[in-house]
Length: 238
Ligand SMILES: [Mn+2]
Image 1 (spheres, protein in one colour):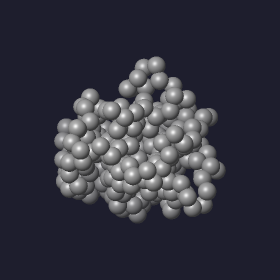
Image 2 (cartoon, rainbow, N blue to C red):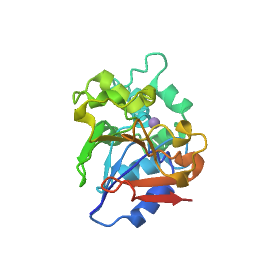
Image 3 (cartoon, protein in one colour):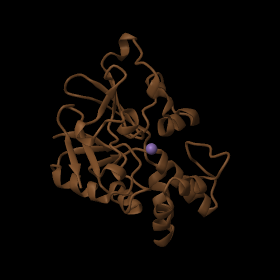
Image 4 (cartoon, rainbow, N blue to C red):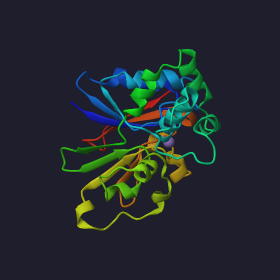
C-alpha cells in the first residue's frame, strides 16, 4: 500500500483520471485542496474527489471561497475560514476563476448536500512515514501550524491562504528536525522561475517544506507525491 499527496488540480479532471489509473486499490491519496476553478471541469473534479473513498480531501482556499459563495446563494450565514470582509465570497470566487464551478453546482439544483460535504472537509492531515518523518499536510502550508494543533478562525485562514511564510526559515528547535510540511497553493514556478514540472516538487526551508503544486492548469502536469518515499511518486503530463 502506498500513500500519496496531490494538490491544485484546478478543474483538470483528466489528471484525477490519470491518477486513478495509476493507483492500486489499497492506495490512499491526500488531496491538498483547490480541485475547482480556472480549469475546464471544476465542479466535476470537486465531485469526483469528494465521492472517492480513496481520497482524503482537505479544504483549500478555493473550496473556502466556494463554501462562502454557496452559503451566500442559499442565504445562509457564512462558515468560511476567511472573513471576506471587503468583498463577498462569491465576488472573490468569480475573480479567481470560479464562475464555472459555481454554475455547475447551481445547474444541478444547488443541493445543500454538496455544501455540507465541503464544510466537513478537514484542514490538515498528519502522517508519520516509514522513515520516521512526521509529515504535516495542508493546502497552503503555513509555518504557524507547527506550533499549534488548535484550530480557530485565524489558524484556518492561514492554513487555506497563507503565502507569506514561504520566506521564513525552518525553526531550529529540535522538536521539528524530523518534521516535514507538504503543501500546495503556491505553484512551484512562483518559487523558482526556471522550474519545470520534470524537476519535481520544490524543497525549501532547509528541505523541510515541500511544494507539490506544479500549477496544473498552466503546465498541464500534476504530481502524485509518495509520502513514504520522497524520491518516488509520479509525474503526469497531458
Ligand atoms: Mn490555493
